[in-house]
Image (cartoon, rainbow over all chains, first blue to last red; front, side, top):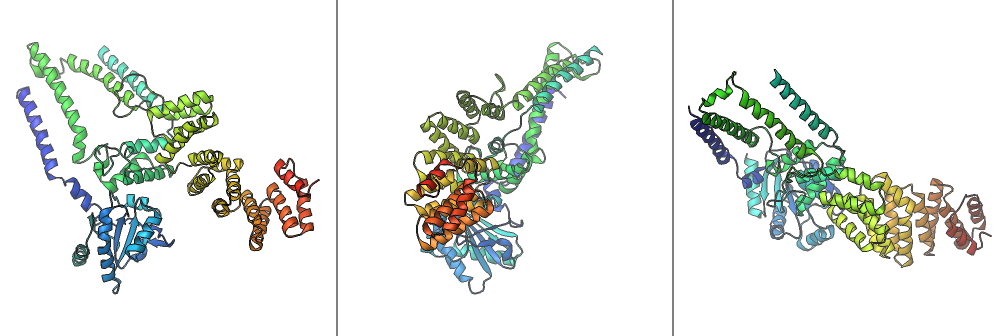
Length: 175
Length: 405
């Protein structure tokens, strides 16, 4: 075989491998949306703005919606009424709890936001940057559904609606 | 045989060069390590910026997390793999060497081998010989030549890449810059003028080096260039709000400017940080907190003054100096219920440090003036008199009240 043919063959194989790799891997968005799902939920142990210590491990046995939020983010503000309704809907059965983790925000602003807009679930304001890094949060809002066994069942990048959360919960329960 | 000796010689010379350069790498500061790791990770939400360059909240959070892990002694690779496991492989500018991603490393090598092969075969073809003859045992001149030339080139690239603080994008020629660590150590013992030059040099290599910014600011401050000092402190705090040294210097500068409230805020922020003992020693020796609290109280900001002292006491409940100052400020309110708290604070200070001059002087005054406890005051004064070189201001204070002659 002549050198030209050898070269052409090698280049062809390399190009084929590259095409195969690029064609079969997940897109960037897919990877962001599926990361952590099925994994054990990273630890969350931080203080609420009322000064109480909140620990995700204490919630074993019930579903938890972990919501990363900032008062300066429009989708966070838009999704808030949906979270309030979702929490209200599950209050009686106490089968799902919500925890909000403020990210890159001031405690005073978060406290004022919840006072004005409702939401009586724990809002964590300390060590939140560390928690956000632990959860691989890239931008708020992001929400995670954590199963009663402590595994991440679903992840939503962007704002949620009450219906969408209910669907996610139902889907996760049926699995 | 002679040919093999040459190869061996080339190996030894360049191997020794590489080894010596790598072995002499000075230890990096933690801030250097944080910057190096952050510089090698892509910001997860911004195009074309590293975690070190980006100011988006998650990049700042990642930098804080890297700093924490560096301080806790995690290795670079452990930090990198931890963050990659959270944010995905896309954030790693250094692709892993296994799996499909490993092709990124393999393909350039394959391309290089192919290029050499083609070059060799073309050269032989021009000479009218069988191109594949170059790989036969009998005729090894060209591969040997390429090998001998290749080793120095590889050695040159390795040395250039790993020596000093040359960035990944810098062209590997020209002077090898000193490491920032070396420059910072040199600056410690340099004259003020040279300190500033050395810190400037560090900041050219690494513009976000908080240590250099902080200490250049402090040098500016001590040499009277207060505007430049303020700018450096502000920049250092913006880059790394958790760097404790800058908080002390900033507070000192604000105190000197008469901005006691902001000085107090910086000291309270400092209390929340994990600072090395030298920082607390500096603060304790300068009595900056006590002086700031006294200045705030003199401005009528008693609550803020007490908050500042309490923040320090919360961090170190056995700081007799802070307890004494707290007691004195409370006593100066002349409120009966606060005077009780004042005595309690002064008593605690003297239990912790029975010969603390301020606590003795303050308690004697409170006992004498406010509680009309002349015996108690006299006992404190007797102890005060036994002190070697008591602060002159305290002596004057006691003299004006007639407690000392």
